[in-house]
Image (cartoon, rainbow, N blue to C red):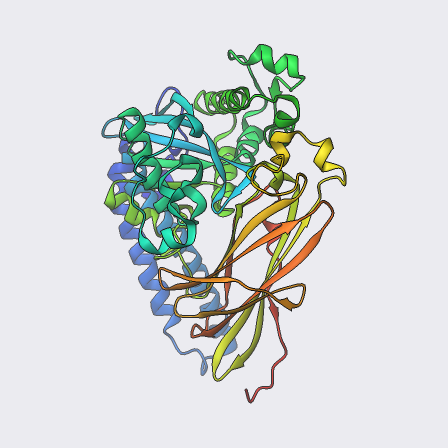
Length: 484
């Protein structure tokens, strides 16, 4: 534990000067050994039968077991970070990562359309933001890149055809490896992995670093449009996901502004602005909310990343046994998701024939103004180009159940509705396309049956403009006859 306490964990925050990652790399085996020892001690204490012990003994025993279990989780995470972070931060040579900034105003399963792209280089802990591009500039993949048949059936060949659609699938390893291949086909550069964030994460970073100024070639257009030249943790989300579309009509200038903001935020991050603890807290918060996703093309590193939610995988060690997922894909072809408010809730119903049964309830409301068709820019409403009336939002709502379960039915506002059933990684999937006019609200429910898992259900949702804590409601349990 002495080695763990002595390490400078703030070295994991990249700077423009770099970090000495050697001590962290050297200490990795010792941290892993400490994690193993504490885990073994916790398991021994948990294995003691305390039913015949005096309360004065049983109480402290339980407390010690709980504290050791909590320490085990922290040490396991630290051991994993110590084993992979130095290499990924460039301790053994520069590493390049494709940075995707997901735009939540146009929903994709893992967050939003990846409109702005850049290359992040890590060299001995030194961060540099290199070539910037947009998804549109990457172009169309002809022929499309291959996607596994199950995902292609659900999400179409668009996943392998357009950079804007690689994350129609909620499985980030699929989206990231596809994006890597597209980038290589377009530029000839093979990146070592993919990092994804959204404007909400940028706001968390800015809360620590303080404001940034836009000084790039897009500055004149920004001033002319009346957009802020100073971005803060308070205004960056609204600016990037709403105001930019109201005040700049040219998509290329919108992308340039987005890229310029990202450049300045990462410049502030790499220059050491902000307190390390605050930065780590903000980025960790983003990871917990599914707003920070990481994929590495190194199989050893990816095996470690896959243990955690920031891997964005829909299967594997990071997925709890009774996990449900609800994901949103824009069908409007526009930026209307900024106006949609949602709640998602699990309702545990009474068992049927000895199997668990669970309902997933998704309530969506279009908060756009009644005159959205004319009051909002055509770039935001889509102008009906894809057959959706201006001001209306169309969303493909995708619900995943646990492994081996069935998706049995769907209903909208209590009335049964058709849905498309699929299977992905042995998990049942239901898809419903939903339209909402301005001010309209609908409640969609999927019923999953034949659930064999007895653990408490867990819920993962697409991160949106809303705080995740406002979207995911507490699980509701039906009152059941004990004999059932």
